[in-house]
Length: 528
Image (cartoon, rainbow, N blue to C red):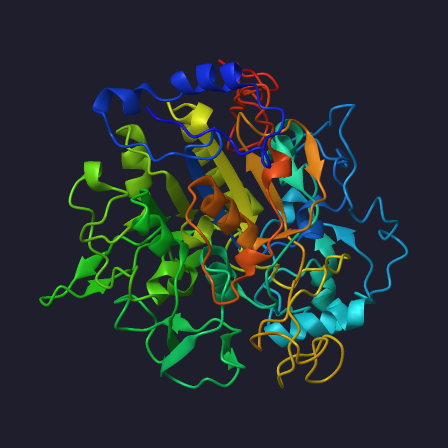
């Protein structure tokens, strides 16, 4: 099993005997079936990216690591004594002296399902108000009689959860590494977010149906246009539809024969017509009992926007053994295929996981409790597999949903289009960006790295963005860069969240998906 040593730049203190001995025990399945294992620049042979929906950093970590613990019906959370502080509302003194018209307030576990907020490209910039961060209620706050606004109206945008509700995420932060300085690559909703995750480049969009107004600005994708019907049978008709040009990370992985896949809940068709055209109508209810709509959301499926990586008819893989390889599925799979591959010992080198709608965390139709069930069940399965010692799980989000966060990131891409509003009408700095309509960095969001190679109970303040995960994958497999002014070229590194010098240190942490605390028989960080 060939391995590539870490570069001196990445790991100046790596102990070669420690790393090699750990790697020899990583995955006997790989040694047994003689599969080609592409060389990596770190001990990480498998990256699992869990890409969730619509959460700002302060919405989940405003008071970390201090939870209220004032309700016996909620799981308790007690931080380790050596937990580092984060740049949250509590440490910044903004819980009670906040410049917004509604003060931040705690949402309880019973208030898990709330209203969806306005997270448009221009409206999020208005909320930032030239960096004053004081117009969220007026610009992105959204409520209606059909959703829970906690009695705050549009002020619901200022609500946050703590470790009594997002308990699993706080426990993962306690035992692995998290960032308090990670941002959306640009402002705007889900589609730009997922495109930035896989290509770092929202420019190069082609309109195929509907109107470009409000969806394309300066030649860049700024809103939730759907994949073209020619690339996805299950796209939503009578909506603006587009295709993306240029490369994505799937193209780079294919060029180096690295196995990979995008696995999304509901991707498997619920039926087909006589011509083989797929329908994706599988649906579930969220924790409140309300329907979350169909499990599969086309504009969350980033690779479906590209001719090179789309699976238009949602064809299944030809076999479990071929998951991750190029066949009729073209690397686009149902989430159940990830489970099958994991259990069969066929985990691709790079896996992107997208929960079914009801478990993706999106306010309005999903919630933190359904999200926790998905995250914990998925991560438990990976931890209990033979691949754990060689795996890095990255949890991050596609956008902030417009929820309040008090930190403005650096503006690395300026733009001057009618949709820009950050520094004035039609302005995000100036017209100095290589491509327009890519104002960013956008809102701050959570990012966690869960791995035996992650630093333990560590908070990283390196400035990163969604394309930092892309860059980590590119560097780990020597893929090269996307090019064409992709954000990967300037993205901050995830490497400070790892420790490759002492062998895998962080133990498995098996959690209860209901409470988010350690499962019975598994203490804090137990490695059973």
